Amino acid sequence: MNKSREQKTDAGKPEWLMAEAEHYCSAQGTQLTSLRRLVLETLIKARGPVKAYDLLEVLRELGHRLTPSTVYRILDFFLRGGLVHKVNALNAYVACRCEPQAHRHGPVILVCPDCRTTTEINDRHLNESIFERLGVLGFKIKTVSVEVRGVCPKCAKV
Ligand SMILES: [Zn+2]
Ligand SMILES: [Zn+2]
Image (cartoon, rainbow, N blue to C red):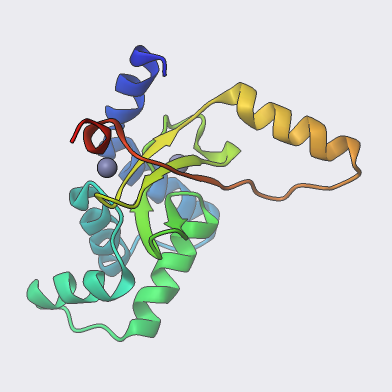
C-alpha cells in the first residue's frame, strides 16, 4: 500500500470533525448539544472503534448516565452525517478519519479483527468506480460503506 496515503489518513485531525459537526447540526436545523459533543469527543479520543455499551460505560464514568436508546439516537444522528461510521465487523462505531472535503463520499474501512483496529482510507478512484459500475446497472446509490477484513501490518509481523 502507498505509504504516503497511509500516513495522510492516519493523521486525520479531530479538530475539523468537531467543526464539521457544528456545520452539520446547523444544516439540520439543530444544535451540537453538549451530549452530542461528548459522544463525538469520546469516539475521537478512543482512536479506534467503540461498542455502544462501552461508550455508555465511558460516559457513565464521566458522570453521564444515559440510556442505550439515547446513545443510539446520537450515534444514528452522526452516522447519517458521515461523521461517525459503523464498523459492522466489530459491531462498533468509529469517528471519521478522512479528510474534511472527502468524507461524504463514503468510507472504505480496513478492519483487523485480531487487534480490533480500523484504518479508514479515502480513495476517490475506488469510490468513483463503485458509482460508475453500479450506475451502469441502473442502481441508484445513496451511500457507500465498504468494509474490508484482513490482518493489519502490526499483526502480520507477529
Ligand atoms: Zn469517514
Ligand atoms: Zn491488527
